[in-house]
Structures are given as C-alpha cells and as structure tokens.
Length: 167
Image 1 (cartoon, rainbow, N blue to C red):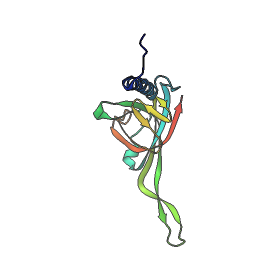
Image 2: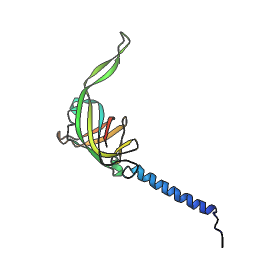
Image 3: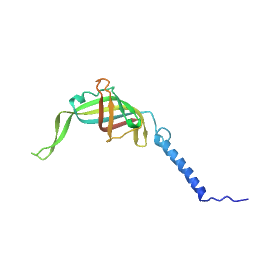
Image 4: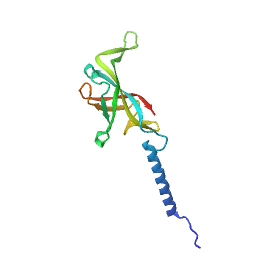
C-alpha cells in the first residue's frame, strides 16, 4: 500500500482554504448584521453642530424634517428625522489687550445650530452606522433636507458632537 505524503502543493491548498474561511468570517462580522454580537436595527441619535450660520438659515431647520445623507454618487442614500433643533448665539474668543486674557464675544447676526437626527442603524465594533454611513463624534457630516415644515430645502454641513446608540 502506498503511503500518502504532504508536499508543497498540498500545503498551499490548505493555506488557501484557511484564508478563505477566515476572510468569509471577517466579512460577516464586519457587516454588523450577523455574528460578532453586533445588533442591527437599533435607534441611533446624533447631534450635528453647524457654526456661524445666518439668522435666516437658523430659522429654517425644524423638528420632523427628513434628512438624507450618504455617498449619492455610489447610490448609497441613508436617512433620518430631525428630532431637535437648538439655536444659540455664535461667539468668538477675542484677546483682551488690557488685561492679557481672552473673553467670548458674540458675533452679531450669526448663530450656532445644533440639529439632532434620529435614525435606525447598527454598531460594528466601535463604529456606529446608519445604512452605510459611519457616524463618529468629531467627524464632518454632510446631509440635506427638503425642510418639510419650512418648505425650504437646506444642507447640513457640520461636525458630529454627540452620538447616542440605544442598542
């Protein structure tokens, strides 16, 4: 009876099979929809801060507005609903030449607008996603809305200052 021996070709085939299994399991875990303890379909709220906007713009966003975001060129379109809008006077740090300190000085006619958006998404590792869009604190956020209540479309371009994942 002939004895079976492993040769270099057999080892390469085994390595390819192991790599395929590892790659497939990493992909499934990376989607956040299956395996890895990740959950899908959880409520996510995040707040975007838009700085130094005119008084006219600050009055446009309102609760209930539908917001779209994502990579439109790639056909990715994700959405959420505005649940809160807060408007505050914009300020700037100004050096006080008399005592050498800094103070906050209001900017006339300019407002900071904090828009809180609610959507449904999932968490993969430490990344929160709504659809294909990653929502991370400190990242720039781009979106647009048709302004349901104001009937005036507007774009959202600001920084994410808060992410609340309820999963």
